[in-house]
Length: 456
Image (cartoon, rainbow, N blue to C red; front, side, top):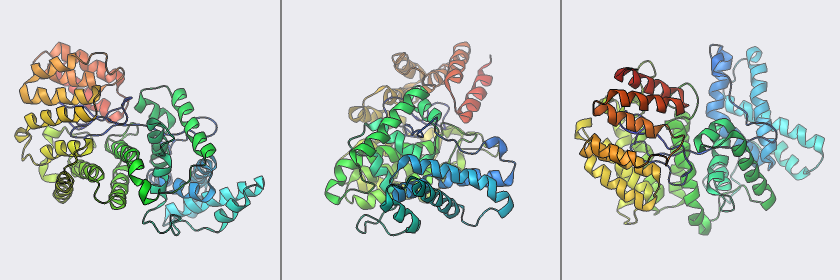
């Protein structure tokens, strides 16, 4: 299902984080970490974006948070200190930039400010003198600490967060906090748990990294395979947070989708011949190719079946199809390759009416063998509804009743099927149920428009 289709669901925000939801958006969600005290910091208030300096800080937060934080973690070796110093650097930017002007390279300014703050803290603490010398002398973006491996701090951070000693949801949550800068509340909504529960879960994850002495590095080549699955899950969900954000005013966070694609390309280079990284890269490229057509001039979501396909990025589509073909020729199918094949069905349809829904339904059935769960079944139900008619899809959706509590895309999918059947009163009730559960502003606006179409 898709986040940009009125007949299909959006990204998964549920407990099945490893499988996540799939479909023409094909992504799941998970969350992030907390600071040592109190909730995780949030970005600058979007309500203040009419102020040019605050707008610049907000942009820097969205684009540079993960990069600056990853560098500070490498320099200090202290996750909590690094997060505090980076947050203070952004606060400092709000104080200094109105007088000094927005720097030409905001990320470098923030990194230097955060690093200097870390040096000051180390001096006061007196301990960890070796770390102090490294933080005081190392330059941001310096030579890799992994024996010449072609990588960067963000990829090191992902592998550190994805250590097998951590539960999968903790790995994903921790990485998305550090790379995407999501708040604890946003991550809790993504996992369908309370903010307190998420905060405790992430605090335990960071403590385990510290107490177990997990190194901040990409593992050696002979250990890459056992760690790659967890990294794929993180990159998959990082892309999805950009493709269909849990929070924020807009329906897309392009800096996150671009970062996920960039890091997945690095991973493909680190694991040559492995089909699942290639499958994930193909999946991302095929979805990202639609970005220009996913919103209208007012910034509102455009359903997949109503998108102007001439605005799709055909170079990205061609690359995604080529990467998928290379992965499939390795004859080792996996869930990311199957999801990419579903995305390819949409990408190669000249019009929405040409979409091969029977093939998509079959692919979802195959995906369920690899990653069974109610979110995949929800996607399959929608595909069946498109292939065989809304009655057939509605029967499968009704069978999922109670399987996805708090997941707004289940009542949204039911509402769409009921709308197509002309059962307007029932459709309105289902849209209202979906609205009561939806948190993202773009989702709520889309559902409100659908509700208005069927009446109160």
